[in-house]
Length: 404
Image (cartoon, rainbow, N blue to C red; front, side, top):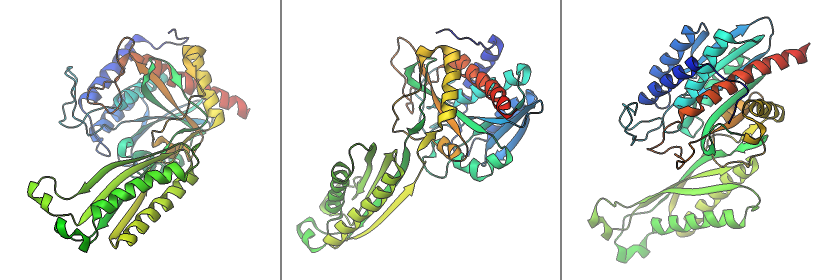
């Protein structure tokens, strides 16, 4: 697809090298010390003011031109995953059991490329804050997005809006998707345990059977979703772990267990549904345990909130994408997805928009995220840099005009 704005080849080539370097040296949540050093070093090299340690290992680069008080935030995530890489190319992960399986190496490289371009050639009046965030992959409130916000990100670096981007292998390379309102789900995790006593299978009637009670609870949880929730509400309830007994000891098959532990996740686009499920699931566990005479515990842990794009910023982001790649490659009314993203914490503090940038290589099967064979598509780096540069310059220009 053609682009109305192109980035110089040297910047693109450098960004590809940065991306592959980061891919070879992955660091997981809040361990991104070498990554933060790399990012900070590049920003300093570009002449950009650098701030370290925001949200533990986060980095913010500040580039100011002119006299306008308007500022915009551009965010990229830096962390990798606990996945053993199965690729064989030269820049495969050098860290056993860790890899960039979600493209955060590419996100970081594209934002660095935009920072370099804007520092050298940018034409704008105002301030750009380049936000390099750690620990996006935790799945709970102990994540980098929340940590940076709690650490005063938008107090220290006030912005009128913040924008985020994620590559998406299921979309044609260089295309864009976004929507106003709920775009990605909240994520919560829960755990319950059912306790009893060890027993001989022939005398299980003497004490409660925790495995049987837990299995009944799992069924009741799915029944709760199927029959006590408006089917128009998007909800994904998953039981992901069920542990009871000692499967490593074959002789223990002759002993009924004294405990069963079950864990699961909940994704939804509605905060009221989160509240209902927290109360409803606890009630199911408590009543089942009481009815059987077993002990129980129940923990419901809130994770990322619903990611909600604000209308004006989504319209603006879509217009930037259309001018960059053409209207036919931009969908600003996409269906919400039931994944989750901690950029939601930033959008809970200031207006903004999160977009997907297509990464599918034509003629190849999509390389899904969080997969040991995944690799970021370097062909979309020019589009990503172009999007960030165009968005920053235009946002500051239009915001300054609105203030006049």
